[in-house]
Length: 325
Image 1: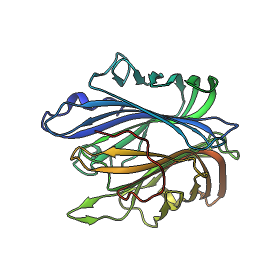
Image 2: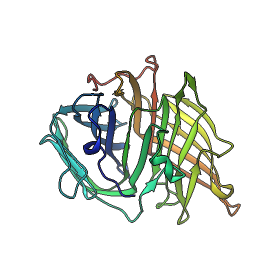
Image 3: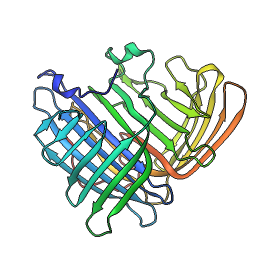
Image 4: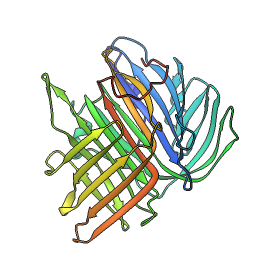
């Protein structure tokens, strides 16, 4: 399965959402970018596209957040999505503008696509209602970012990822964790999503899906039948115990620098909304027990994404002044 846009095949009466996104972070500073291209479609309505831009710089306080919406959506030749005449994204990179922000980013990676869900038939079934992949789970970016009021940012060799998700509604609660740029293993990365669903008025336990790449090998994390998952989370960070295949276990601790998180509203097709707190320059430590029995520790001071999606609104993170949907 290769990444392709889902929204052109959506049924007129159905509700859905879709997102293609990237995150990239500098090696030598807590400076990073998170760019999303989204589709929101309420049942019986035409889809609405949006471009979201967030620049994180933990040295200077709150992130810079911008958003533009447009009815003009298309799939460009060789690409995934174009929103109006402002932004487009595809396997080779992303170009666009969003208010005072402009970017031109090329992406390269030897890492094959990550399909989080296993077994693969979950991508064809009604549950989970959110599907996700990472077309490029470990990427290198080159290009430029321009934001009014600050010098042009040279994105040369920044590390990160490219992601894709879609579905009929968001999970009731979720965590997304992506880490790269570890001092102990420059090629290592982790990409894992955790979710809780609301089914029949009851909230399911957490389920994790993803992978970790360490010492030259990729190992699957989580899954429907995995045992030993432990989750402690707040908007300021999380502590996770992640079971993996063949006896792998990972303990992860992510922490958000003070005032460095972005707050967004995410709309569901049914008209409800989540609050989402994302920090793409979070710190991350990983303690691994590999299938071989060997133990490894990985750490990064600012190269992790920690994201928490939730219903509550008293999380204390200021929200960007943009509606969704």
